[in-house]
Image (cartoon, rainbow, N blue to C red; front, side, top):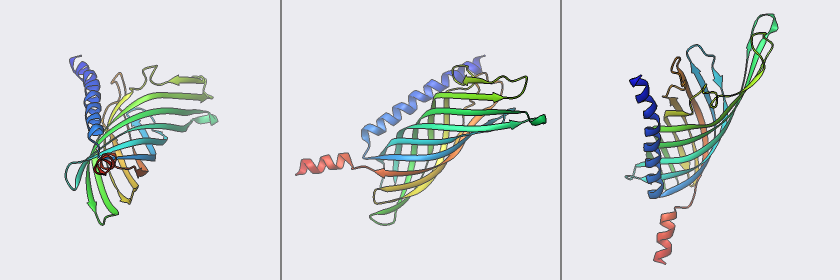
Length: 225
């Protein structure tokens, strides 16, 4: 019981720490940007079938330089996800599950930058990302006598935990203000609220982005004029 309570308390503490660090990075950010991405997360675990999702994500990013080659990258993202799977049974029976979900993400990455010229650079990054489930609906259509058609809210029914901590790694390139990158997020938290089974959600993603004007530099140039 004590171990379960410690794990339960760990989630909001982790959320608060990650949010605080992201906020501090936002305040001190030297570069701002906008990103759009496509990802293919999968929810998997013990005694459950895999659920694949098609996810589209948009967000604003904040980047703060530490040295000439290292920076702290964070952002705020919103995503919509969709998934469809069919489990077949004898006598042509089946159970079809359609999922619709919304998520929010707060990444906090250490980024290594390798400039090639004044307009082109490579970069690599890694670090934690806090994922929060906003909604997750499942529509089930079945021909089995033991399974009735139904619509289920995964969070309201306590079938799935809203909080997920992921460890992400990836890389990409930037030409002028245009950014192309990709990576993979490894799910760390067990998403089963009862902890009777193990459920994780991980997945890869591809992103295009655009770096906005350096607000601090623009303000400095304006004051010098």
